[in-house]
Image 1 (cartoon, rainbow, N blue to C red):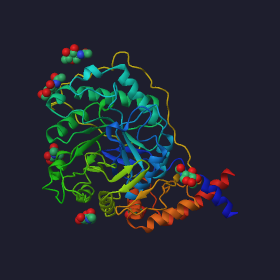
Image 2: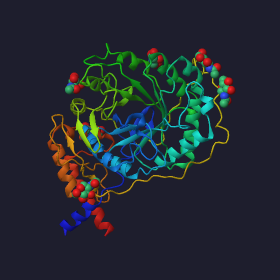
Image 3: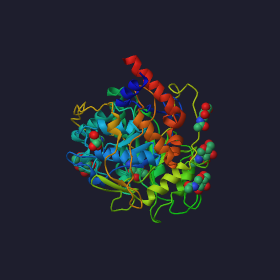
Image 4: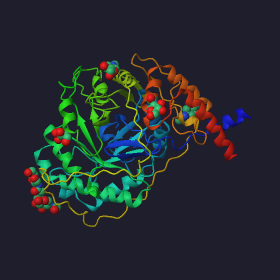
Length: 463
Ligand SMILES: *[C@@H]1O[C@H](CO)[C@@H](O)[C@H](O)[C@H]1NC(C)=O
Ligand SMILES: *[C@@H]1O[C@H](CO)[C@@H](O)[C@H](O)[C@H]1NC(C)=O
Ligand SMILES: *[C@@H]1O[C@H](CO)[C@@H](O)[C@H](O)[C@H]1NC(C)=O
Ligand SMILES: *[C@@H]1O[C@H](CO)[C@@H](O)[C@H](O)[C@H]1NC(C)=O
Ligand SMILES: *[C@@H]1O[C@H](CO)[C@@H](O)[C@H](O)[C@H]1NC(C)=O
Ligand SMILES: *[C@@H]1O[C@H](CO)[C@@H](O)[C@H](O)[C@H]1NC(C)=O
């Protein structure tokens, strides 16, 4: 009896592994457990800016997602950032797999393709109905996935004095219209934010402007791309202390949307301990290491070639740094839904002079009707078939995504609990997953057993 129920359970994994994240008073929280959420992330855009094109993007190829998400899970990651997607494709499998692996997505809505981004020097020339159709279609394609942590309205759109003089009002207009579209069409609040360039003269001023005043057009979070800490640096000599002071009073969550200087290689990621440590974890909500895939600019953790992949030394070093973290364990009282933040006034800022433009003329009221949805996956769909080798070139066998999270509807199977203990047995990734899963609220060891029981219970109820 038990055996047959278990094998039935083995056929299904839950479609809902992680809880949506909400923002309360400049921090991220799990909307169900009310535990504070720190982003432990990696930027993910295999192929770089050419990784999106007609018919392909980083979240549409099942074989690639499976291999990479299994490796990201073993690395100890809870969030990926994707820079560009093709909003006409089906992302259900990759997004459901990401969710099953206990990971969130931060998604940029722009792409390098025509009519799909702002021109930083002449934003009015790209302020078009076609651009808005693209933005709305991207929101539509992703808004139903509960593991979407937020959307970036832009990445480094402002990166010099000229673009600083041209763009801020447009960025606020985009924030306003993305938030309004989400409010009108999505069934939960999905935060909208901006990711700023590594430029100390711009980021604080622009950030204050994007997060002040009327909440309807203000950024809900602010991401900083920073490459200041190189090699074996320190909190003060890297510039992190100055950066931390500059953002100490921001009224929205602030995190590193890209970090990981590579002028010293292989990277040892000593900045990771600093970012999540006592001097910074009160100001920043974690960060995303740039980047998963090895490209020409040499920031990769993993080298891929067709379906196969090889871990680089940076992957091993980052895995050690993540396994060594102890993330603050903060749980809100049950007031999560009612707490509100009052944003500071915009007046007195250098950039308080913008007239925020209206929606482009002829802008659509809806996107292209391609709506994603989380789907249930089978245990077989979690098993990696691609060839993956370690740093020395030895094949890593038995690689799979271990389902984590809520114990509902058959989430844990015999196969996956075996692979979970195998993962745990390898030391770092097991620990990494446990300490990382603030959002998930469940460790691997004992709670897996409970999950199996709950899963069986759910199956009994269904039968
Ligand atoms: C964009 O703005 C510039 C400078 O303000 C102006 O010269 C140009 O005509 C505008 N272009 C469009 C398409 O509105
Ligand atoms: C607003 O002020 C900034 C800083 O003084 C200036 O660079 C920018 O051109 C001004 N923008 C507008 C729209 O007047
Ligand atoms: C942040 O607020 C504190 C307390 O009001 C103040 O002392 C400090 O100077 C502020 N920091 C910045 C960078 O504005
Ligand atoms: C582990 O954490 C400690 C304390 O935060 C830090 O000093 C040390 O550098 C970290 N080690 C690694 C490998 O990151
Ligand atoms: C976090 O804190 C809660 C209570 O505040 C406690 O029950 C839980 O065991 C703690 N978790 C960890 C990993 O320390
Ligand atoms: C992996 O290979 C097995 C056996 O060849 C096959 O049954 C399964 O469908 C494959 N899984 C994926 C995700 O391709």
